[in-house]
Length: 124
Image (cartoon, rainbow, N blue to C red; front, top):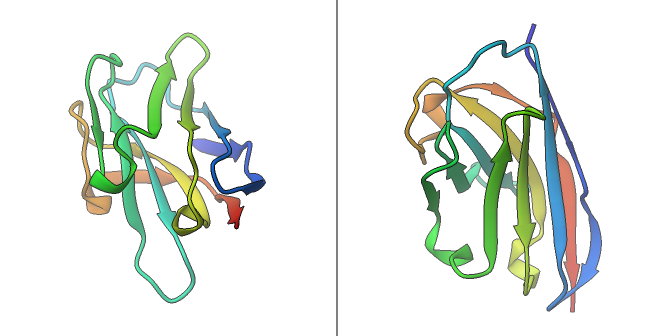
């Protein structure tokens, strides 16, 4: 059984930084891309970043390019999202997910497994 558990969320002032982690279990030997999404109440889940299974390629939504960095450690079966220069519009629940594909994916429909999410709140 696959489990994903996010951590590292919290409250931070605008301009600050947070590092999210996603611990995975039950994936076995996997060549799947991993991704980060976020969602605010009343809106659809939004793609944030995705990392190739080997960590060699990444994909980001335009609004976080240059501020967020996604990475993975396959030995630890973990995914990370370093978020710098946070803005109020980054406030959301952040989810990690496991894709069905090797290549980074922005379409939430390409993801099979999801974590429960971690809240990130950016204040002015």
